[in-house]
Length: 447
Image (cartoon, rainbow, N blue to C red; front, side, top):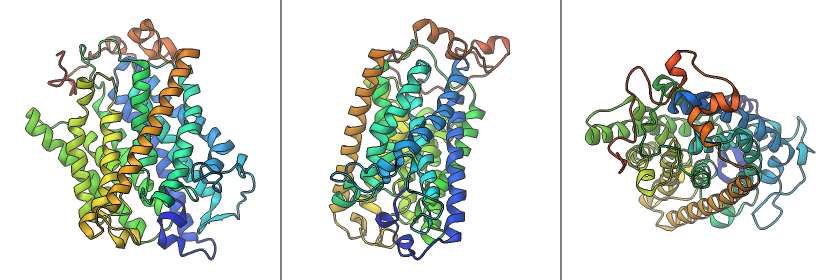
């Protein structure tokens, strides 16, 4: 996502008035991105054990409601209002969406639609963090964390990268077409922070914690891939060639990410898995998010492949470094976001960016340096502020569920529900009818 004057020269040129084609495309793209959060809920829900499925689904769904309230009250104005201070935050001129009517335009589309499109990005970014703290989070604490995090972390970073005169886009000159910094790196670094605040799950590195439903995982990945076409293609804010290129790059990177992950599994483990295919596709999509509107198709293929290969190894870091990132938010979203953001510095083409070029396209190393600075700054800010938020919540009300609640299962203890009324499956530790792939196998020093 981007404001028109920053990263979409084709759209920026069309400022005469509302364009019905651009508006129709962004309406569709907004619906596609909204679907991604329920898709993420299924993806995450399939990855946890049966005793916490509903809790995982609800953490994503409630994020939709919480972020919407925050965004409409203050988030949009602070992220996309006129710059208030040194490219760090927007002004309060549109609190409660004040001053924005049906005839107000952002480029060639209604500002109300642009704001809603941006809202769907904020929703899924908050929901992504839940994967790092699955199986052990107090739901009431999550209800407090999401709105606070959205205001203090997501909104400032969105202004830095996409807002009018945001410092990363305008002063630094780093590129992020659809959210490598704002969505992927922010959610990954924040996920690591709260995972450290809560500590590891009971039985981490000792008990098998396999995904209870691979069909749900694959279904969720498919819905994410489908929605990602709107996520990236819609970020052009126009129904034009840039949107088409971004959409093609998204398809290509998802495919090469999938193949890269399966290649690693075959060589390392001796068998490719459906879990690996779903994870590899998501890794490729994560990496292409910042670069889909800045690189040509060959660059997209390399970026997706690199993410599939590197992320397949990165998910094991938690066992060596002793942090419990339950559903690999760090290994996939943070690492994939870093890969995609940095490789803009190698593969950016002037035909896509309207100016800046990567090292391999005659642009020198300057753009790579700008991308690296943006990665470090966003990662450091989001990690430190999220860690502070998590610590305060943990001290005031407790962020982690009790040991008894965790052992029994969050579905029963926090929500008085069970996902499956099938006897032994309702207790869901690791008792599935047939073995599912386990990322802990051959990677945990304790096994």
